[in-house]
Length: 205
Image 1 (cartoon, rainbow, N blue to C red):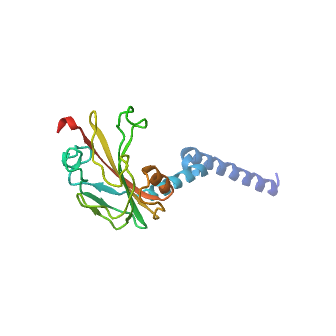
Image 2 (image 1 turned 90 degrees about the vertical axis):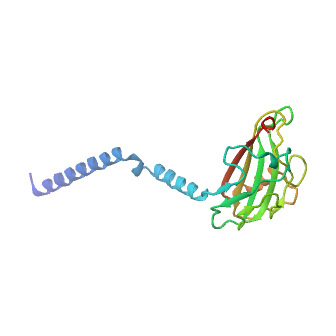
Image 3 (image 1 turned 30 degrees about the vertical axis):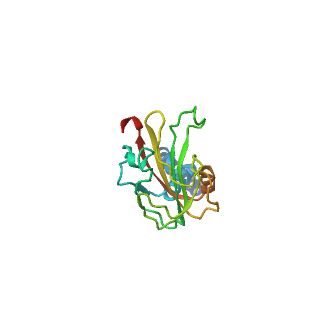
């Protein structure tokens, strides 16, 4: 066996050994070697960065608790104080939607009642005081009014969702726009969102 043949055999053995080590690493760590897995991880990170944490609270009631009757049709029918925090940098406006998804289908086929629609609030807004008019453009609620309409469930306990959105733009919508109009205009512009839910049952007052 000549010297040239020995050299060829040596490099062939090195190649085989290296290939074996590579496939063992791939087998143990498929996610790190798969381009698709890397893309998925990057996409997840990007999505989590876009929807940053934001908080909406009220001193009037806790998450999931009963809304005091003074903020309903059985009281003064004014909205409670709402507090906003952790608004993301880059936000250009805020939108606030309040709705009830527990309406009897005999009254509303979609089971939804929109109580409050406000958009184009300054991104610097951190509070809407009790009963005060929000600094923004009012949309139309299901009752046909550009104002807050308090809980007034006709049959049982209903849930009421206060939904806050931080947007990277102002919405090109007129006063009196519907919740559906606002939701459509917000698509692709939501930097963060938060939700506060309270319940109300007229029979328990």
